[in-house]
Image (cartoon, rainbow, N blue to C red; front, top):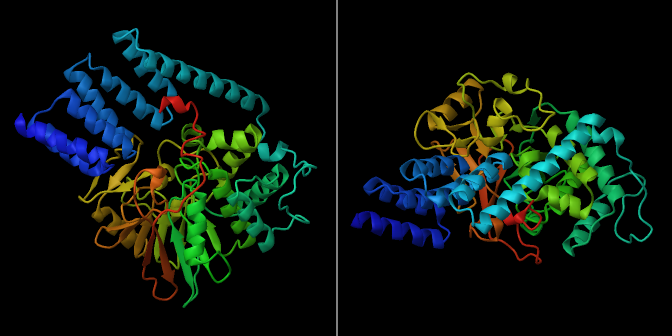
Length: 469
């Protein structure tokens, strides 16, 4: 009992320092010594901070089985469901709190916020099902507003001058006109539709490509990447490996900058889909609210259609497999298999595309169920080895997880995680990183960097029902 209390205090101290993985480890040792609902809920909270809602759900449910009246456990379950975009399941847990404590005002407020969001989603789905047509075929380009005095696309041609002026406009927190946003989205949609699920990238000998991980609406850190490593150009290739939006409150600026560079240099800038380029995540983590606030619901629907067309991944020089999440629940998956699924839809709840965007590596061999609460595996070094061997590849590069130094090398050097959003959500204290590969040798060269200051919009400012969090 005394040992368990000591480990609990140690876990609490790590939690306060935002060292959530260390907190999980201390709480786990405390649970081994003496399992209690409090310890399980503490570990569940740390799992939520690590964006592992599946693991949090397991702990909270076990706490309820030990003590069905333990109110905090229902809150933890509700939070986990919210992180997965499951408002109905979250509402059910808030109802359980109210059954135990009918006067709990916070639970009542959150129950009502869930109800409001569910009604909104039902209403919008009903409207969309009546129309049926993709928004790209019905949206009107419109004209530039008479009062607009910012950069504009001339003669329907994206130029270096426009892209650089647009970035400066964004930097001082100004918007570009809706007409040019819609134009870029329609043009980049055509481009993405022309690609297979996994795009082959060729980097000639002696030339470079830089692979970046999640940028999550941290536009000012994106500008810093370009300052450190040069702007995209025909001699300075980039591959951004998904999660351009959500969390950070400059997601519109971030993703439009990347789309503009894709249009400017289609053969030298590459963009993969992440698990946050999807409707359920955008509803929860801020991108939908941000686009509605800065433009309109119709423009958000067009963004969603573009996200559904993003390639699932890339293969560089027939050696490096780049995908946002990771590998698969089957051993026999080939690149040909990965080209088959229909990706032009919201992210499915299981299957090869889901696994591509959601899976994580693990240190032990084999596979275990994901701690994220999604139907995909955590995969071990043997899985990576087999996949690379079966497909005649040498290396997996993926993103999807915050790393203290911005990157991490696992699986005997054959699986690299790269994450490019430093001080994630203004609180994690992590570095960002990017990886540079040179054609011919294809050896990874790492650059790490710290965050830069940004204006006052806090992360998640546009998140739906921010009170839910």
